[in-house]
Length: 88
View (tube, rainbow, N blue to C red):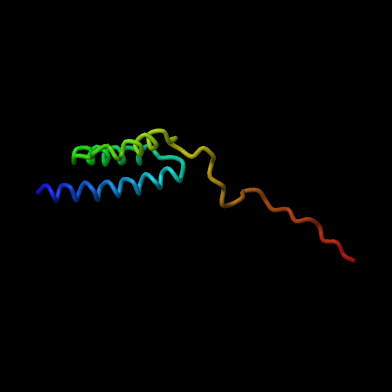
C-alpha cells in the first residue's frame, strides 16, 4: 500500500510541476485556476509531500490573477481607410 501511495504522490507531483510551469510561463493564474491548484497542492501535502513543491507554490502564489496587459484584439472595429490610388 505504501508503494501505491508513493506512486500516486510522485505522479501528482509531476502533474503539479507541469501545471505550474504553464502558469508561470503565461505570467498569471486566474482565481478559478488558483482554487483548483490549491486543492491539488493540499492533496499532495496530505499524500506526504516532502516539501519539493514549496518553491513552486511560492511562485504560483506570487502570480497576478489576470494578465498584466490586455489581450490583443483579433478584430478591429475601426474601418480600414485605404490611401487614394495615384495614376501615372
